[in-house]
Amino acid sequence: MAFADNDKSNIDIESYFHDGHPQQKNQVWTGDGAPSGKLGHKNDLYIDNASANHTVYEKIDKKTWVSRGDYLGGSGAPGPQGPIGPQGPQGDIGPAGPAATVTVTPRTVSGTATGSTTTTVSASCNADESLVGGGLDFSGPNEANLQLVKSNISGSGTWDVVVRNIGTTDEPVSATAFCLSSN
Image: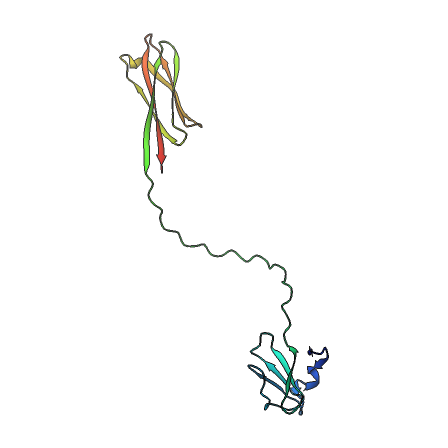
């Protein structure tokens, strides 16, 4: 391993070691901050642990240490994106939200079941409402002549009632859509 000094020459740190230990005449010192002139001997090395890149100094005479560069170079290029980690555990259930105000509004449409015919009466909810059910009312004097053929909820929020009048007189018929709205 070599360190570049300020005048572009290299110091070979491996020449300071033999089998992983400093050679008898040379030592490698470490500390925080620049070395004191009283520390070490000529050709010793010193690594400043307090500097960002661990500056390396060489002692060139009895009292003088000279910076020979940094032990750590600049940051390398970023590595590739790592794999996506496993999914974490499910979180806690959050607090209950505010209570909604729910309103059911009956929307009634009246019609007439003409004698001896089948009649459809439809009641619809507004666009901002949901149809949740429906009702039917026969209230004429001859309501016994009315028969429910079918009732259904269509996909558009409409309650359809189909009535057959087996009598000869017209009878009133009402269909009611129960429409839910909330805020």
